[in-house]
Image 1: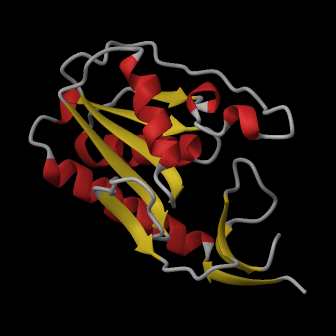
Image 2: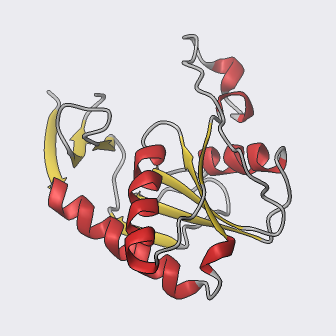
Image 3: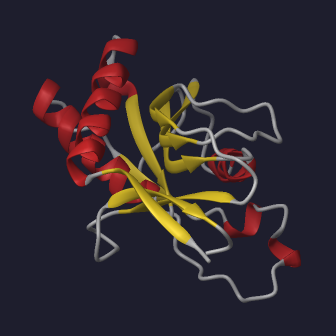
Amino acid sequence: MNKNKKILTSSDISRKIVRIGHEIVENYSDISRIVLLGIHNRGVPIAQRLKFFIKDLTEIDVPMGSLDITFHRDDFRERLTMPEIKSTDINFNLDEKIVVLVDDVLFSGRTVRAALDEINSFGRPSIVALAVLIDRGHRELPIRADFVGKNIPTNDGEHVAVKLKESDTDEGVFLIFGDE
């Protein structure tokens, strides 16, 4: 039997995003060089929320784009179902920019590796940093997040699901026990 446990509420998520936004602004002296790239699916609305927060805080409207990493995944051909293809949307130059890659959950690191491949198709940033709402551990590649909302160590058989109002009926972060 599968069980879910809500570990972050909507207001918790908002506080984590505000903290990540503060850390990004504090970490880089030239905010005008920052661009945000959200990884489809839930990295995009998180990046959008960061963009709004950074503008409220600094009055600088940082560019934001989205990445579809489907064809860069190392398990693309092994999947049994046809993946839903989203579009990569980057309508600005990445050369010499500070790219903050944004995703909901960091797990094995394979999604981030695929995102780095996609970014390389669009230019050569001076820095690529990673911001994630949740880091659940279990890395398979030498990848770490620079900005983390919450670390949630998981065990075998546990998963983390992020639900956001932009794409889901409920908003929260859930620990899922079983194969849901």
